[in-house]
Length: 512
Image (tube, rainbow, N blue to C red; front, side, top):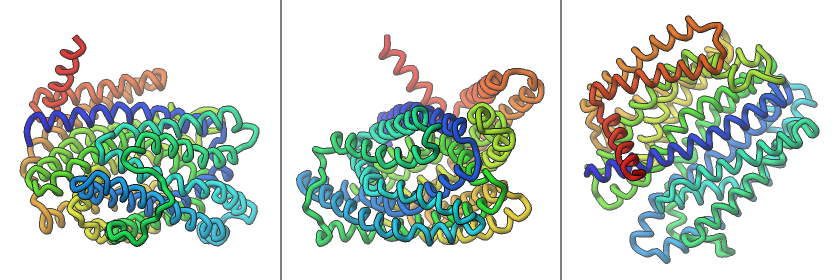
C-alpha cells in the first residue's frame, strides 16, 4: 500500500472522526438533558426496555442487509452503473415492504414479548413499556431504509452523511425533551423517535438519489437480491444471537434495584461515545477499501489495510480504556449528576462504565475482522464465532450478576468480547488471510508502556485533587493522560503517531 494511500485513509478517518466527535457531543448533551429531566426510575426503565427491544428487532435485520449490500453493490457497479441503480432501487422497496410487515407482527406480539422480558414488573409497568414499544416500532421501516442508504453512500465514499443524520436525530430528540418533556413525560421521547427516523430518511434519500431511489418496482425475484439475502442470513443470525444476549441482560437488570436498566443504558451511551469515535470512522472507511481491494483481487493490499486498522485500534483504544476505567465516576458525575439523576443513579452508572472500559480494543478489532470476512463474501465465520461467545456471555451474565450485580453483567460482556476477538483473529489467520502479528509486537509494547505511564500520573492527579472542581479535575486529568501518552509514542517513533504528525503539518501548510 503506497504512502499516498495510507495518508488518504488516515485523512478520511480523521475527517470522519471530527464529524463523529461533534455528533457524539450532541448525543452527550441529549443524554444529559434526558437524565436531568427524567432521572433513573421505573418509568425510564420501562422506556429503555422498550427501546432495547426495538433495537433487538431492528439491528439484526438492518445491519445484515447494510453490511451484505456494500460488497454486492460494488461488484455490480464495477460492471454497470445503471444496473447498480436498478439493484439499489429494488433493494430499497423490498426492505420497506419487509419492515412494514415485521412492524405489524411486533405490534401485535408486544404484550407477550414484554411479559417474558419483564417477569418482575407489575401489570401497569409492563403496560407502560408496551405502549412505548408500540409507538417506537412504527419507525422501523425508515430506520432500516436509513441503514441501507448509509451503506450506499459509504460505497460511494461519501462517508460523512451518516454522522449528519445522527446529528439530526440528536437535535430533534433533544428539542422534544426540552420543550415537551416535563409536560408529557417519556411518551414525548417515544413519539419523537419515529419522526426523527423519517427526517433522516428524507435527508439521506436526497443525497443518494442519483445512485438509487425508492420506486414501486420490487425485486424479490431478482437473482442479485437473492444473493444479497443469502449472504445476509448468517449476518442476521449472528446479530440476532448478540441481541438475544442483550435481551437476557435487560431481563436480569429488570430484576435488580429500580434504575438498574437505566443506569446500564446510560453507561452504554458513554461507552459507545468513545468506542464509536474510533470504531465508526475506521470500520466505515476500511470496510469500503477492503471490499474494493478484495473484489479486484488485490489480497495483499487488503491485508495491509486491515493491519493498518488493527494498529490504529491499538493506538487509540488502549489509552482510552485505561482512562475511562480510572475516571468513570468523574465522567458520570459531570455528564449526568444533576436534576432527577441522584447520587445512587450516578454510582450505579459509574460501576457499569468502569467495566465497559475493558471492551474498547476487542470491540474495534472484532468490527474490523468481521468486516474483512464480509468483504471476502464470508458471512458464516462471524456467525459461528459469535454463537459460541454469546452463549458464554449469557452464562457468565447469569452467574456473575448473582454476586456482582450490574457489574457482573457488564464484566461478562467484556470477557465475551475479548474471547471473540482472540478466537476470530486465530481462525481468520488459519482459514482466510495471514495477518503478520509479529509486526505488532513493538507497537503494542510502546503503546501499552506509554498508556500505563500516563495512567499512573493521571491516578496520582485524581488522588491529590479531591477538592478541585469536577470538570477541572477531569479536563486536567485528560490532558495529563493523553498529553503524556502522545509525547511518549512520538518519542518512540510509533508509525501512527508519525503519520498523524505528518497529516497535521500538511493541514497547517494548506492553511498558510
